[in-house]
Amino acid sequence: MTDRKTELAANLAKVEGRITAACAAAGRERDEVTLIVVTKTYPASDVRILSDLGVRHVAENRDQDAAPKAAACADLPLTWHFVGQLQTNKVRSVVGYADVVQSVDRSRLVAALSKEAVRAERELGCLVQVALDAGASGRGERGGVAPGGIEELAGLIAGSPGLRLDGLMTVAPLTGEYAGREQAAFERLMDLSTDLRRAHPAATMVSAGMSADLEQAVAAGATHVRVGTAVLGVRPRLG
Image (tube, rainbow, N blue to C red; front, side):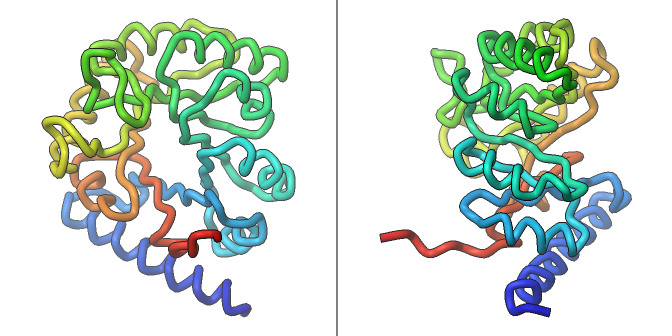
């Protein structure tokens, strides 16, 4: 086993242990939570190692990194998630490899994703990104729509050809009433998910929690956690 494979296997085992413990503490079954490994800034060779180690869900947040990496790993049994803020001029590329876009936060993006999904003859899963720090603009610091905008956007996704409404995603906010209160933020997202599922029963996915706060997300009820540095390590800054 290579040094890198040994390192990633050890890191994965630690994260797996954390998720298992968090599920046990919350009275949940381990298979209720899906691990998504965020591989941004890391090479396709790491994605191959992760696949060998049993990882089935990977995520990227920049199309210019993701597109060549997904192409290099097209033979692997992976589900690709796009989790970054997405500009409409990158939509055609992203639809070419992503199975799920977790960062849908405006109607113009829904229209662009639908158009390209139909063109590519693909069904694309979509999550509404919820901004729990949304200010007067109705948008969050790191993208997302205010809770009050979920219903309209979800309905738009559900009614758009080529798109499938899968659920909700959030990033623990750094500002506002939920700053430093990750579990409260994730519990709020779960409440919003309950509301959403009244109108869209199949939209059961709740993506929340990262390396530092995955336990709080599992405790709140998240179905998917997005973990990068705890698995892959911290890359040294370039330059």
